[in-house]
Length: 138
Picture 1 (cartoon, rainbow, N blue to C red):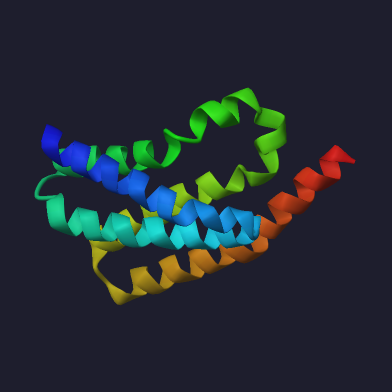
Picture 2 (cartoon, helix red, strand yellow):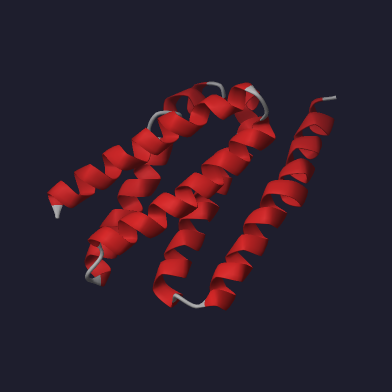
């Protein structure tokens, strides 16, 4: 179980490093790429490693920890400056939760609803969050 946790943790860090460059282009691009990537990696890792609920919890924990471990010190130190981009890690965690949900249910309606949630969160909700934070700073 420790080996599985470590492998999943490293895979999550790798996904973060492979998708974080999109933030250089746009905060919206970062939200899209990370939420979709974490949705997919969660589903694939759950499919590969989960055989019981206890292993499922450790896989989910390793994915979330791998996502937040690099950025956490920066976000704590520069909280106010990082507030406009705080929605991106939230979207990653939403992608992880939806990936787990799709893995558990394995029904087309769940996959479609997850897709709709990802689209709405990455368009309407992300835009509203960013505009609200920018307006607070004025």
